[in-house]
Length: 215
Image 1 (cartoon, one colour):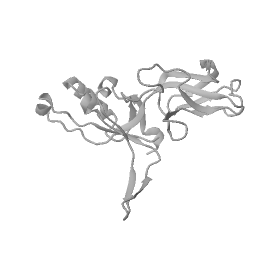
Image 2 (cartoon, helix red, strand yellow):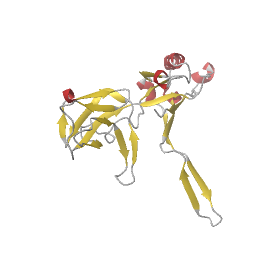
Image 3 (cartoon, helix red, strand yellow):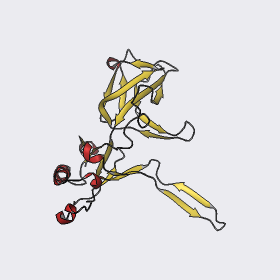
């Protein structure tokens, strides 16, 4: 199936996502040599996040909401947006986003399009993650630490690409920064939701696995 048609630009219910557990996963191959030393190799260039959204389901109404959402996505067939309660914005935890949070590129007088990114760690060893699903309306930009007005650029909220207007192209040796909130593209990681209602009513937590899509 064409990837352009296999993603629904809708967000998993935010109030239920707040109770989810999970986070980033990496795949590292570790070989122990005869000397006891190790050789390590990263199998994945990018981390991939996994979640269990079942922890956010507290009531029968919550359960019905998730089942309806699951059915509309046809199980694992269609991807959707998910707000990670621990990592959903460009700024540090507890801080508001600003137009100076993340450096997303440098001007050369010709380049107009820049991908939103988020850096984890420092310039030398940090991991750079592309942000493909910014939250609509939650974006601020600056060039050389001067705020950019919304009429100077356009945003593709479905890909995280910023395009400056022809009369607002960042000039050579300028630094473009951005602040934003964002969602994670995910899908259900199972084609069934199996729940024993009796167990659920006495506190059993249903398993609602989600996995990040690298789009």
